[in-house]
Length: 502
Image 1 (tube, one colour):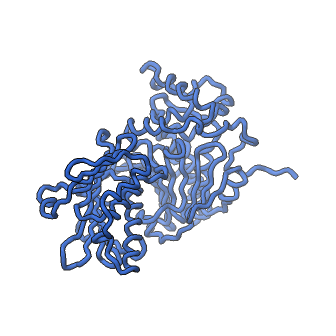
Image 2 (spheres, one colour; image 1 turned 90 degrees about the vertical axis):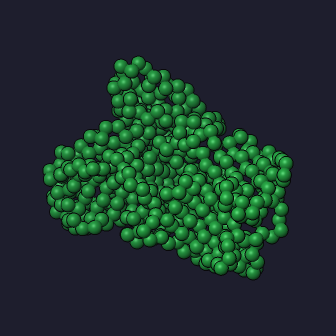
Image 3 (tube, one colour; image 1 turned 45 degrees about the vertical axis):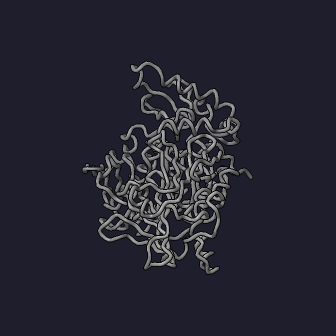
C-alpha cells in the first residue's frame, strides 16, 4: 500500500503498518489468538473510532484484498477532504450485505435489528447485531459484526470481527474480499483431508482429461493392497508427483564425491563442498521457539552458495519437502561435478556457465505468459511451470525472505493445488534450475516404495506395477491434458531445445 510505513516493535514479534495520515493502523502480533488487527482513529488525541480483528487461519489473500480496498477508500477521503472511512457516510448497515445478496447468499433480518447472511454451501455465516457502545463491547469482548467460516473444520476455520461503529462501507469492502474468486496456491500437505477432498470434488470433470478419470481408482486400488506389500516397488507417472522418495538418492552424488563433508546438527543435516563455498542442508525438525517469521517445513532442502570460502551466501535455493529425490539429486549431482577441483574459482566458473534457460523452454514447447512483473513458462502437457520475477531486490532482502523469489519452479496437482516448489534468489545459477527442470519433466516413471507415495497425490497420478514395460509406463498419461504419446517430439525432454532440420 503506497505511502504506508511498516515497523517492527522492538523486543516483540509485533509488526505495525501505519497509513500516511497516521489515522489507520494494521497490526500483526503472532502471539495473540487473533494476530491481525486494524484500528481507525480519526483524531490521535481521542479514542479509536472502530477496530477489527482476524483469527490466525484467515487467508492472507482475503486480508490483502481488504487492506488494499481500505487504503483506496482512505486515499479518496484524503483527496475529497472527507472522513467516511472513520465515521461513515450515512450508508445503512443493510447496504453492506447487498454485495453478498447479489452473489446468491441468503440474507435474513432477525429481531432487534440483527441481520444475517449465509453462503450457499453453508460454510460462511455473517452476523450484524444490534449497535452496542464501546464500553459494552470491551466488557464482554463480543463485537457487533462477526464472520464465521467453516467452524466444523478446526484446521481451516477462521473468523473476523468488527466493532459497532465500523462504517457500512468498510463492511462492504470486507464482504467483497470474502468473495475473492482467484484460486489459492497451497501445499496439499497443509490441507486437512476434508478440504482436499472437497477441492478435488468441486473441479469440473470437463477440465480433467478423459484418460485421467479411469486412472484414479487404478492408483487407489494398487496402494490399498495388503500391508505386507507396503515396501514393494511401484512406478509412478508423472514422475514429478511421485513424492520425495529416498533421501539417500537425493544426495548420493555428494556422498560419493571427494572432499564433501557431512555433519548433523540439532535441526538439520549438512553437506559442505571441499571448497567451502557450497552448503546443502535438509531440515530434520523446525525450531520450536515462536517467531514472526515464516519457518521452512521439516524436510525442506536449503542450498546456499558463496563467492569465497566461509563468506556470506551469495545465492540461495529452497526445495519444499515433497520435492522428488530425482530433482534434488539432479541439483546436487551438478554441484558435485562443479566442485570437483576443490577451488572456489573453479566452482564459480562451472556454476556461472552460460545457460539459455528461457530460449530452451520456448523451443521445447513451453508456453510463455507475462503477468505484471512476472514471466511464466508452462510445460506443454505436465502441470509444471517456471516463473521469473522482473522485480529487483537486494541480496540481503532475498536471503532474509523479505522479497518474493526471483526464480520459482512449481509442480502442481491442478490449477489450484501445489505439490512442491523450488525457489531461488536472483543470483541462483541458471544451470542448477535447468538441471531441476530437466529432472522434473523427465518422461520416465519414478520408482517408489509403495508406502512412500503421497496419499493426497493419488487422484492425479497413475501407479503401475514394476513389471510394466518402461515405455508403456512413460506413455501412461498425465494429470493435465493429452498424454505425451500424442505430443510431437515428446520422447525428448521439453526443457532441451529440439534440433532443427535444414
